[in-house]
Length: 499
Image (cartoon, rainbow, N blue to C red; front, side, top):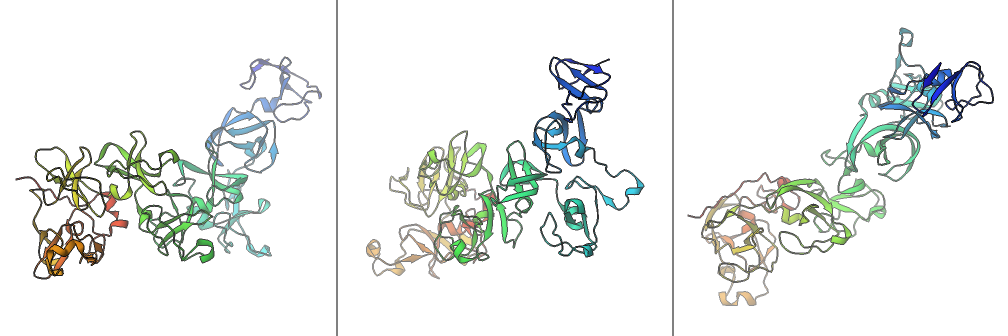
């Protein structure tokens, strides 16, 4: 009687009485009874080992397990082994044949036991009075509670009933692009907190990526009030500033926000490990993927530019990108946008051109107006695609008078400086006086056009009153531009058609 086995290329012959000089390749025990063997390959298997199924499903692992012949460490009992094991090649997960064969809950006599994917043995309700020190939950790492703790005393494994009921088996995490599966490993380094751990882990076996349960279940920025969060902007957990020692976070020192580049003092998050990473609370809410009208072919992803691309020009403003800051990028097209350039929304039309013009605000530029030929410094309109630039005053369809909720009266588009602030208008460009916008209450350029109420002497920068462009302050009910969710582009369009 012969036998075909998937682990050997030859047919295995049946041997009625084994020779103890033969060692079973499956269980590595001397063969004393019936077996199958191939003398050419010196491959022998006990009758019972030869009949083991090639593939099985087991509650302790979500993927199918295949019978393999390797040296390994069992992910159930954490003991080293060789010979047969059941293995998931995707997750690099192994179990002894003996561990796979442990009894599971299958009869009425097992009442009160729970089979749970966090542990390979059935779990029972634990009486904590027998312990001198209260054991801790393997999931939340907090002391276990009486009458609500399940565990395996032989393995010193315990769980809160609430933790056992709510822990997900599979998660998606901002630290890694693949789904992460809850597994157990004897030892590993958490890629989040960089600590040596053992036991439960969220892992991607294909990428050899592992997170401990605490890092794996970190809340996202949407969980308001959390002291520690995960974010795709950084590969380590982020701690809320003000909840860490000033010495460890550098609280009070000047640190640049990795999104907007402005100082980040006490309103934001910092790396909980050792990285010099700081980001404003508002900036961390930036979407990781946007669909932008300046690049309709593909989505843009918020990322740090590769080192070789540092200093690359922004595809919108032609100014160099700061490699220290996050930027929106399409790798395939080498299309890049500053964070603030990605906020601009095309909204004005000019002539018969199919393109639309974007309002540029608060940034110096090297462009000249294509209508009057004069320099367009700030507060101008530009088509990024065809490089057409025009002053707001030169646009025939621009509203010369508007109403806005920031002021009760109508506002008129006026060439600045405003003469009531000057002794002589011709001295305007020679004065060192500072000029301010009455909406955002920030300093403005005295040469820039403004919307102005002559009766009330109220001055508003163009960007603060054009409804499609996010205002920089929330005092009048507008969203603050630096941290607004207006990046989702759910803003009103102001369509100004040419008459």
